[in-house]
Amino acid sequence: MDAAIVIGLLLVAVILFATEKVSVDLVTLALLCALVMSGIITVNEAFAGFGQDVIVMLGAIFVIGAALRETGVLDSVGHVLARTTGGHPKRIVAGMMASVGAISAFMNNTTVTAMFLGPVIALARRLGIPPSRLLMPLAFSSILGGTCTLIGTSTNVAVSGAMVKAGMDPVGMFEFSAVGIALFGVGLVYMMFIGTRFLPERDRAEGGKAGEPIREYLCEVVILPGSPIIGQEVYASDFSVMEFQVVKIRRSGSEVEVGPHVRLEQGDIVLVAGKVQNLIRVKKIEGIEILEDLDLRDSGVDMRDASIAEVVLTPRCSLVGQSLRSSNFRRRSGLSVLALLRGDRTLSDHMGDVTLQAGDMMLLQGSYDRIRVFEENSEMVVITEHAMSHGAQKRGIAVLIVFALAVLLSSFNLIPAAIAFLIVGLIALATRCMTLEAAYENVDWRMLILIGGMTAFGTAMAKSGADRMLAELVVGNLSSFGPMAVLAGFSLLTVLLTQPMSNAAAALVVLPVALKAAEAMNANPRAFAMAVMLSASISVLTPFEPSCILIYGPGKYRFGDFIKVGGGLTLLMVLMILALVPVFWPL
Picture 1 (cartoon, one colour):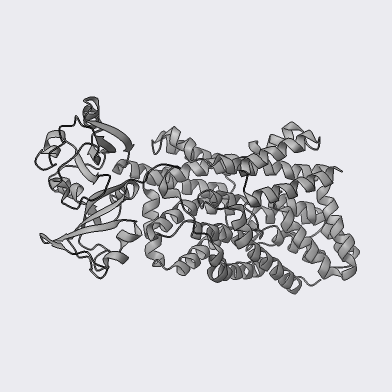
Picture 2 (cartoon, helix red, strand yellow):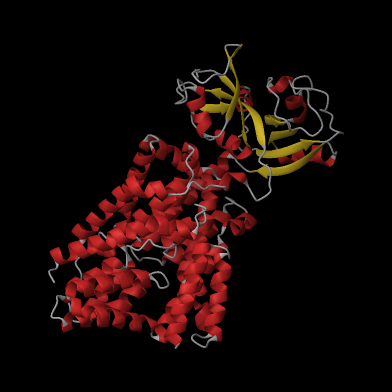
């Protein structure tokens, strides 16, 4: 009865997850309550999953990624990736998956996904591609890369240890590499030509919180010598990629009419309209410069460590009725205006010549104490403040270096991964790469609840005997069809069990039964062991795999997206395992 209840609840969970009519975290907590109330697991067992190291590790990764994003480091990495791949979508997917898979063959796949998560998001935004188009291939390649070597995933090591206990030889470092490389290669081709067709184009990351208006400022940008934007057509230029609208171009003192075939030249002053986040990123992009920044630097003023604030002019502001030029605002206040916003966005003149009105918004750069003077005199209201200093980027690079060191140390088991990443997260906070409040806001708590709660389902399946009941069901119904049918049954069962259970747990549950079945049929037990081990590492059917959980929130994915994209890939991987395992380990 307990086994039937657990399997029934699992089916209910999958249905609710797939429909997404109820939030995944609420469904998970409700199912935990049902398991406890039915007496299948204890309260301690229900919530034990929330104390496991993977929860701490994922939480720390969310914080580290946010710190690298806030300091502008990820934008720089994304810029390098964009240049390397040339911006072609299929080439991006192929290059990214190949790189990630090669690294994942020797490192934990969750760690590899965490390493590439931020840079890939930055790359997507730079190229104008929704992150949802790249993050799923990222996670899938890290998972499939783990099938290439013994140390590619902890599941492989766990199965090798279990085989030794069963009196078999341990798995060699590259014993199954040929099969793993074949699986990865087919997976890469599948994602390039088939999977990408089903990937959603879903990205609300730039739109802010629900109901929050998207503010677009007018800003003057100078094209510097050697800029990659030189020679690009206006409507197909990097400005479009950065989600800017080109309003006007001034060239050698004259205005150039903006048209689709007009090409940008060195020294052009381009009036663009864009979101504040993108305008701030301009300060870190090679080859272009905000005009006000350039003027200040030519005057010997260093504003790299200044604060940036969005302000609204009040009716009492002394600037109302004047222009920035006529009021000598920069000299009088010690502040520079990077961008200007008016509600109807009809402004098209040089910013310094615009007559300012109450309600106009400005992006100010300078000492926050000077900005505070205007606020205290009720001349301006500060909406937001952005810390985009040169020093912040240096601190971000330092955090990135420490993160890479933590990855190496944890990969060689010199320090637990959860502790290594937690230390990096604490360093990011201690060096003021982000505030503590921002750290909490960037943790995807829903995903942590999901993975912690589903761990309890694995405990419930083991305690109720549901796992062994399913394994024995496979043997009882398929043994009459021969070893190949039983092998297929165990492979599919392993894939299904990796959804509520960890990959290693599912493999260790199925392995003993599979070995006994092989012995009873006088089949090769090593073939069954390899099939179970590989099957535990290729399931991308649902977002329960930690690597998939990492990209679930940032990609704005839904449960059904994984079934749609990963379902076909998982089935293809199972078929390949069934075709290749008997070749290398004859039944």
